[in-house]
Length: 585
Image (cartoon, rainbow, N blue to C red; front, side):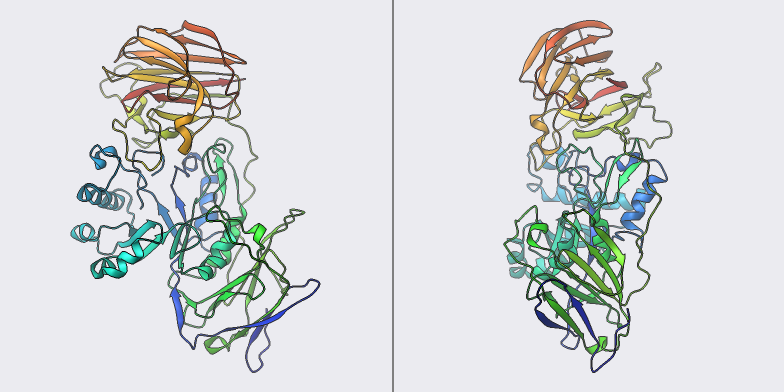
């Protein structure tokens, strides 16, 4: 886009509707620059949100990563935030800790040396085993420095703006130790969990707060769709069995900033809200480059998960940017445009455009930076349901040792490949639940461990697995069908659960907690013996076999009517599974 040069270069943006207001806004560096831009990124974690991504075959997994991270191709994310796995489904930032860190308490801070050493060990391991350099972590300056990790910067909080800010102001040693503060959602310095309101992420967020970094939760919605917060990612990839994925609009809204800036750029002081609604930010590399991001999203299309936005109006207006100072010599700006159409669904995303016509519910980028691209791979395969016939013998050959089995999504506990070095039979390679102490968690995880798999819409199905209990006193294991809940509400999950115990009993329950008993009796089961469990659910009845012999049949079922298949244990204990299979009608 060519811009005429008069006494000062100016850029006019018009909203073409029935009537117009006219306002001018100066973009000038002579009064000094503002905050340093730290980048825009995504969070892989907060509920195993990338669980299914690893199961995608190439080239589709690589294509998904390109849309997220490849420079000047898609979202071009500048930051990756991950969570330290704490043996819990909601887990670098630790949201959960292994039970030993809490030393018997559901609180990780009674023994700060243990907690700090745990986090530092994770950083050292990330470098040693994966050659990863961690840039930011939580509060533990002394322990980091002691291990030679002076370069790792500290985030003072990952919760709310207060009370950490007051503490930092009052404590010089604390102030010297930290690099920034991180708080959730739309009202603070760094925002770690921006959601689908992507326009507010790239434009309104830095204006309406003191935010210099934004991290979207979640990076990619790569978990079963009917788990909580379905499709709440920058893009969606929850069908590794088909290869299908969806490049969602937040990818391109993020690109409006990330493809034309870099961490270390600086906000101009002269940024803010348009008088009649909408907002704009401008950033520079202090070497003459300029990027302006403007948005005119209406209130009803700018909803936030929390906190809710206060009412505001976006009305018709003509806007003129006057470029001054070092920007007065700019003779050309690249123009990128996205427009949301909530009536006809004729949405346009990240389009290179000339000339400029700005309407309500739009976002524009004006920039001196060239090379922006709306990258595209060929369409992925069409969407398809989870296979109705599915088997896994958990053979670890060709798979990383101690990794998860494909398509199983652990909701409580950790299920990993295991090699029985002493087994000379058919169970050398198995899947093993390995957490033996309840983790320190921030949500009410179940008292039982459970991993779900399959299609949430499954109704009539047969689930089978060989199982091996390793706890003499309290061993217990189950297979299940029609499991209706997961994530933070897994504790209240219902379904059809077939349990056997090391004390020689069995029971059938309608819930994970085991309180609603449909049938029970003697099974003769004991620890250190392999058994084959088979559960059949059809219509309003269910039956089950132990080693091919009926234990019970035709138990009456009313709810739930559909759900996932699952495996699990009665408590945090060692149990092995082998030769898992599902047949759905």
